[in-house]
Length: 76
Image 1 (tube, rainbow, N blue to C red):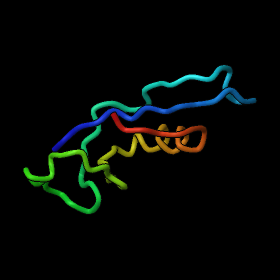
Image 2: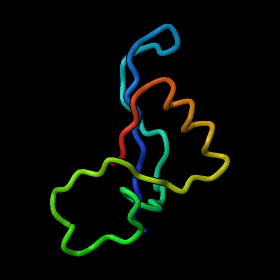
Image 3: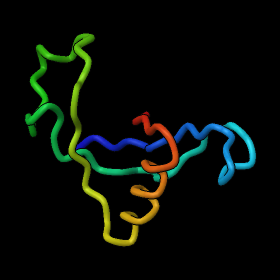
């Protein structure tokens, strides 16, 4: 039930005019983190996740894959 924004970091290249970070998608629903669908209260500490599965609409897929191919993506 958590939601994240997806940000991209893009370095200047022949297809990108200047190095910058920007929001690619916002308010994306998280389906599971590290294969777990329900967060345990005792796991609220500083454990870093390795994978996250997100629920995106078909209309958001193109933006997400294009951004992934052009730069590095982060969840916030």
